[in-house]
Image 1 (tube, protein in one colour):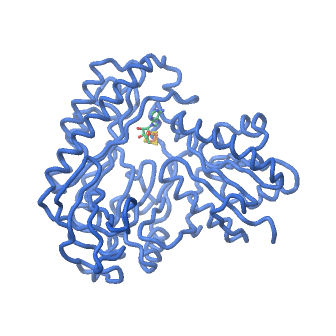
Image 2: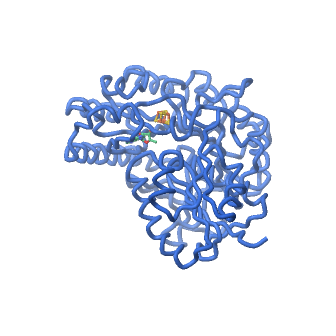
Amino acid sequence: MSNNNVYIETYGCQMNLADTEVVLGILKSNGYSVTDDIRNADVVLLNTCSVRDNAEQRIYGRLGNLKRLKENNPGMVLGILGCMAERLRTDLIEEKKIVDLVVGPDEYRRLPEFIDTVYSGEKGIGVKLSKTETYDDIVPFREDGLTAWISVMRGCDKFCTFCVVPFTRGRERSRSTDSIIDEIQVLSQRGFREITLLGQNVNSYNDGINDFADLLAASAKVDRSLRIRFTTSHPQDLSDKLLYTIAENPNLCNYIHLPVQSGSNKILESMNRTYTIEHYLNLIEKARKIIPGVSFSTDIIAGFPTETFEDHLATIDVMQKVKYDGAYMFKYSPREGTKAFKMKDDVSEEDKSKRLSEIIDLQRIISYELNQKLIGTEEIVLVEGPSKKSDKFFAGRTDSNKIVIFPAEEIIASGDYIKVLLNKATSATLFGDYQSTVMKRNEKLPLTA
Ligand code: 5AD
Ligand code: SF4
């Protein structure tokens, strides 16, 4: 078969990275090969994100570049996948005429068919959302490595008023625990050391038999030397059962990404987050009791409609109370089709920027202080490989997802679990020295451990 080299660029969240692997799995089993050189590609795909306007603008910018590539290679198929597909298909196909293919997150199975439609001279369009598609039986295409992600559920039913995800990715549905466990088994045999279970709202995972805590417990048992992470958790659905499951299983990482979005009850209500800040803080306190040493990260939005300076101070107050290990912080970006889009975007750009930078500065100080406290302690680190800046150093991650840099030594290899004595810290990185090896790459813990 000719015309079969496919190149794909991925934007946005980890769900999209996982979807890209599903797409490549589908295309490969239909005779396509994957290339990482766009100049060799017959099919160029952008897997897109709509969550904030700047993500979409970046992708539009990229389409501008690709226009030239396509002019030189008119036979090339150019396609848009992911969240922008449904939202912008008319604009993409009719206005930006260079796009041949627009395929939304629930229609990837039909991608080979849509590409054939393009080869027969028409546009390939598939943007229907599904109540049932989970790609349960698709084997995602993954290069060998240490860390992998598995999407365990798709869509979101929460309808936070600022968020396009329920519209772009549709209703919640869960994959079967059996197929997820099979996938983890294969990854464990291939030598992976860390798996992240993904969903827009993983805590509402339910395959009709198991809830998310059951899934985590089953995942943890596959291979005790495999770290299991998960994201994203919604504060309304984080159950006690889940917290105890994390506490009982040493290879379930003691790290919870728990977006708060705002510290003000008035704003939380208007965001339809369905919890109060009191509930949220109680949850954090309870989690800390049940899982000693658990760390938290969060998402925060600055400048949601009607946010006053007092509301902003309430967010600052929550950050000071919780002391997050990390945070993803954004300016509110109005998204067409959401409830909040109908509200007046009444916080000025200047105030949004000011509030966001205050939030970012505070988080930097908090992360710095938390990291300073770790100096002098020993951490178990999964060695990921040479550090980005110098191959005289190695980089790895702690259970709580912090990056650690340490001098390379003969005895250390990627995939090993080692003990590192920490001797320095910035807000983003820990530094230390190798102490001892806990487990080599090819070693596994017995299942009873
Ligand atoms: N504006 C700003 N941030 C947003 N997020 C989602 N929608 C918007 C929006 N319209 C943020 C939320 C969410 C994260 C994935 O992106 O904080 O948790
Ligand atoms: Fe969006 Fe809220 Fe669902 Fe997260 S929980 S994907 S922010 S609607």
